[in-house]
Figure 1: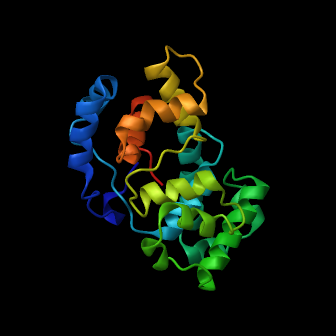
Figure 2: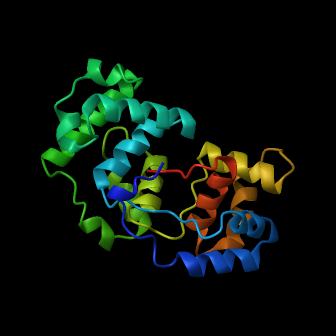
Figure 3: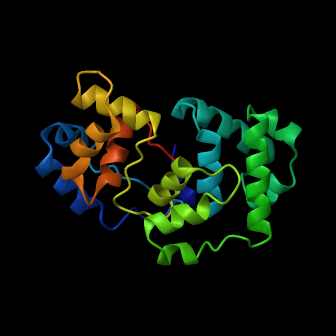
Length: 213
């Protein structure tokens, strides 16, 4: 799922985080070891990360990838210019809902008009970035958290609202039974300050293809 032609090297903290997770959680250690030296590969493209996250809201990774592939095929490439020049009908023809089509067009307009301080985000802490991003139509806390993990490479993000994480947590740590937010937070506490890395491995445990935002 990761296109190496558009990717940069992985996060510099990955090896350290991997060792920490193996040492602190025996269940997670087995998951981490099963994927060898695989790691998150960022794209260094803010628009891609946000647009991809919008497409993936509230649907499975597989469904999101299918829709994204159709969009990329239809436009030739998912770029600010290409999306901005499209319309609702064209986007909806790729399987994107009317609401999400509006979000993508609005996001492209924000980038075209330089309304987002993409460089300034690197100087802000996680909560400040989230507060800034959720001012954009269609970007909620989950999308902002995906951006923190995949674009800004923040090491300690734990997206409680992610359906994949909820599923992985109950599967690996609670015999398939639902876990409350407090229970998930408590279970993940030893993973600090590398919860983003743990989250990536938990996603991989559900789908051998890497999550890509």
